[in-house]
Amino acid sequence: MSVSATVFNQTSNEHHATRVGAEPPVRRIVVVGGGTAGWMTALMLANSAYGSAIQVTVIESPQVGTIGVGEGSTPYLRKFFEGLRIEESEWMPACNATYKNGITFDKWSTRPGFESYFHPFASMLDNLTMTQFINNVHSRLNYADVDAHPDRFFIASRLAREGRAPRPERHFPFEIWHGYHFDAGLLGAFLLRKSLELGVRHVPRHVNEVVLKDNGDIGSLRLEGDEMLDADFFVDCTGFASMLVGKALKTPFVSYAENLFNNAAIALPTPIDGPIMSQTISTALKNGWAWKIPLTNRFGNGYVYSTDYCSPDEAETELRAHLGLLDADVEARHLKMRVGRVAESWNRNCLAIGLSQGFIEPLEATTLLFVQRTATAFVAALEMGDLGDEARQAFNQTVNAQFEGTRDYIVTHYKTNTRTDTAYWLDNAANTHLSNPLKQLLSTWLASKPIVAGLKKGIFGQGYPTLSWYSLLAGMGLFPDPEQMRPPTPEEAQHDLAQIDNMLERSAMNYPDQRDLLQRIPPMSTEPSLQVYLW
View 1 (tube, helix red, strand yellow):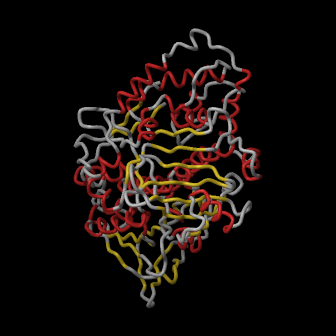
View 2 (tube, rainbow, N blue to C red):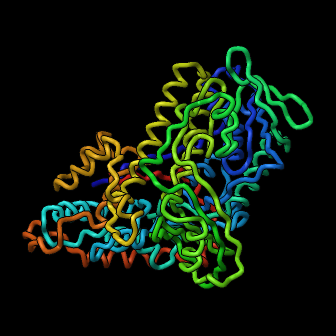
View 3 (cartoon, rainbow, N blue to C red):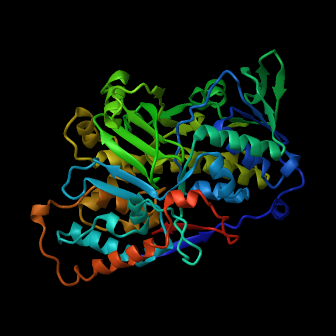
């Protein structure tokens, strides 16, 4: 297996202007709703090739708070900051942020030896171990007793275990394509300041009414005080309220409730001291899972669960017991979730971004990923000067496919669980509401056939690379019964895992302790970063 590395060239607005017309297709864009989604979108619009030719305004209601719980990211957030030329040394301390190598999934499986596994973020170092991992997975699927647990094969899992940051010392060239943990409220405030620096207007007013034109488009907003604000294009960042796309334009909502059972969450902070881990931990509980996210000043904790299987009070008690806080006077924050997506993220002259667009529970920290992807795709359409029906339909088709692919990956965690302690886990394992591509992927795997070709061709598994799918399915122990295993043939036992252990152990020594690095975050390299996919 090899790494396909794509270099993201961060180009100036002046250079981009060579491929856009002198006149932008819209001149006034209003973003309704602030928070991380609203300000991230505003920044990306203000940073488009048109620059100040487009006036971006953010309407942020003082009466409506933001969810502000999602405190983890995928590696794509790094591209966002690099595109704006914002150094980690600037934004990370301002947001109490830490580095993230990936996610540990604990107690999702009861299969011996597979009770826990780590979903790693990719590194160029994985070129040296990916082939051995895939070969061992295929051998084990064919009943050969070889080690096929993903944790042994990838540098990111070793760094996470040892609390090391994914940025190596300068003399070692193999960086991890890392993600982050951060305080969502502080990140929103940071992005607000950066938006104002780029000329974005901030109007702290409540929107009382969305006024439609005769043709059905959004024409203006009636603000508190009866002031009217009109624009050419609107962005709906009003969260689950979906004030513009949902309520005003009546865009249908496609629910994922049959696929993903969870519809509520509880958030609870705890103190942090000593080493700072460089991973998110997801621990399966009775009726959902608990997250643990390290910031520089605290742990973010929470419980994502289904109210069909327990009450909010029961869930809070279970979370407090899990954290050892049954008698502690720490306030818990209860949240409701609507899992699914709108049928059209871009409907008429309005684009939904963030929770108004859709939400797939926070298991793989994809919320900001969808914000970033959606805004990036829209800015690309804007810069091409094409906001017509054909562009809109192609846009929605792409966004919807990304939602479906991500949903399938999340569903697989639940479908492959082997817990039998509650009806919640039994029902998840028995759930037959799977997409046809996911059914095909799982049936191919269970038939002991490689899924690589299907992933490469996009037949199934869209949205995640081979590394992720193999780590999930192998990490959950989706292999034949250990009692059916046979000794491996010489060909099946060809890989010297002790050599891999030695190589990763020596390589890990080049990565600093997470807390130590956070105290002295160096500037990023001036070279374009690599987005690494393992296929």
